[in-house]
Length: 232
Image (cartoon, rainbow, N blue to C red; front, side, top):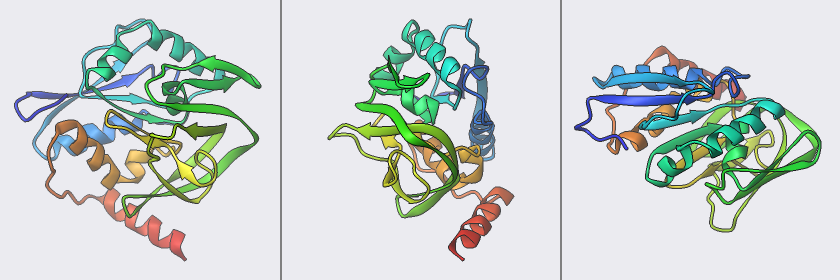
């Protein structure tokens, strides 16, 4: 985990060639830039399918199609990723990344596949695909983005949802994602951290283990305008 004494905040983007269908790699750029503007040195490491998973303050998993998702799960299972997360490294995941962190997920129809088991959550095929705007109430604020997935995710009794769905489907029409001490996840694309700079700062604060000074950018202004337009 990152601390104030570390020289570089390392952000590892996991398998962007597999889990990069929806531009979720932009989340890494947003985190790095918002860290740098606060005086932190930040480095983005693209972890390819032939690379060993490095030690990092933040691991990012994005969305992808069924075949790449299954391959990603296989590769991560054979790597040090799960052990590093259990040792305290932090993960932010989106969509397919969310699903493969759970106990099981479905690909290629209703075929069930083993997840990494880092979170007590399972994903089955829904009757219809969820596509469109997604708005989730997280800690009193609107997390905005879009979703495109065919899964329905059920959380274990002790797993906290990331937030309550106000527009769209998320996990099941009522809640979206999950949040554990070491893993946060959502179905929102966008990339979601670019669309929600306030939430990017929450991810940074969690990884750094400290409160951050306020930072106002054009992205923050665009977020406010988007939320206002959704409320009309």
